[in-house]
Amino acid sequence: MVRKTKRMIIIGSGVLLIYLGYIGVSLMFLPSVEGLKNRRMSMKIQVRDWQGKYHPLLVGPRNPYWTPAGEIPAEMKWAVILAEDSNFYRHEGIDVKAIKNAIKYDLEKKRFARGASTITQQLARNLYLTREKTVTRKIKEMILAGRIEQELTKGRIIELYLNVVELGPMVHGIGHGAQYYFGKPASALTPRECAFLAAMLPGPRLAYNPYKKIERVLRRSEMILGLMQNNGVLSAEEYQRAMAEVPNVLRLQSKVDESIRKEEAFVNLSGATIPATDEEKEQSGEENRAVEPPPAPVEPGNATVPAEGAGGK
Image (cartoon, rainbow, N blue to C red; front, side, top):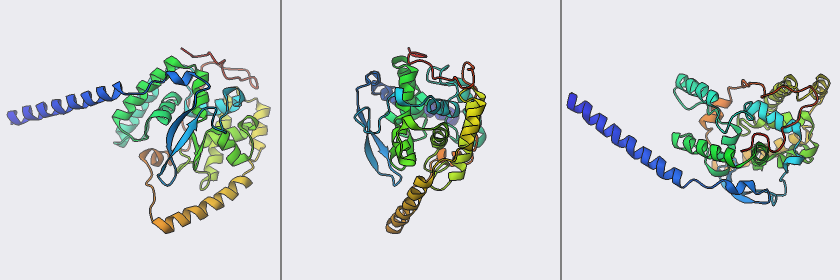
């Protein structure tokens, strides 16, 4: 029995050393993030469509939908920050408190259910990594996030993030999302429309898919508007006006009908479907995400996103 135990310990130690060696080698080949500082830079990344195929996506000013930071409404930035990463201006790429809560939650669920990724981590994943839920990918994601925070300002990080996020079937970035859903440039988005786009971010393919769950997206957008008022991004009057506004979903409805027809044709031809990821399954049960207020209160109606250099390294 003692020999068997020792043998198991030796084997386990060997496997652990091999795994640590693999991680070490993997980290050596992580890409440099220094080029992201260049605002004239354009790079190609691979994104997956809703049928599982990969396509190149141009990230940078050569993309016709690219929206520079100065043309992104402050309400759009705050809607995403408050809903996705309320500590964005306080952390340096990793939110330790959120990670602790996620680990506790994952242990309760006995699986990787909650990622606790910051906006910077999500950017690192979108630009350089896959969405697979593994410890190795998570380590790479955190290291890249730390490097991004060292090289870029918070303003540049949120600009890149909002230009690559998925908002629909092969719809990436708020510039494309604004045209796709509302037929206007991102700079012309209303607070209600900003909240609508931000509401989709946790799971545009499943949990917050506006094609099939428009009511859920609208409810979450109202929750985000409430956060924006509570944190001084919107005045009481602006909040009431936004809540009274009905997003023009006529354009969306035509796309819903078109999408359903294409989806039915695809299923009839292949009979194949893409299984939902654990992340999407988990998101389908999360209506509201607990968030904390931004680092400093602001006067209602006068909220602005901190200057470009704020939080930069």
